[in-house]
Image (tube, rainbow, N blue to C red; front, side):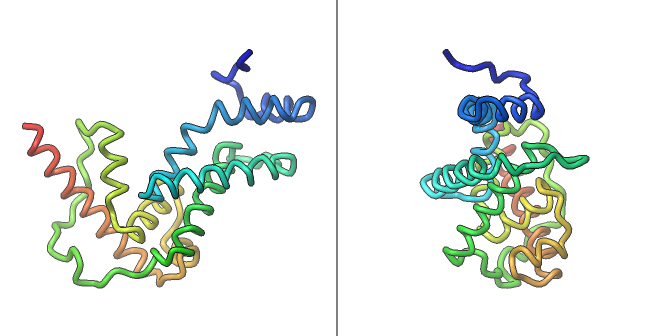
Length: 186
């Protein structure tokens, strides 16, 4: 019988883990695998690599959940998301895909915020996956992980100003992709 996963709280999972770790991990996987898969695919454009990152992340999550201590203002999901993001960045580092982009690449794009009205979420995620690796990493860390450019620079091994400029280029590339998508939909 499939365990109940809808609306189960972090506290319930952790309590279940104390009595039945195998069932707790199954519930956790069923509850959060889609979310963590989406996080993987936001960082990693290659499906096979994203699957590897997700699998490695679950191994790390399962191996460390007994040590997890809830923090004020944080959740089990945010802890797991950080693990996935860190594993994805580690893979990009290993593959040497976090090199800085030349300044003149994508320089003629207008500086604007993307207008997401009418953009299906799956189309938006596909657009993010089409960004150059370092732009995608900076965008994800800044927008979805709420990191400052100083923190991003440290994580990715780039300069703070470079993080800032990569973020703006990523944002402008997305705005351009969205504008083109909307024109095709007319």
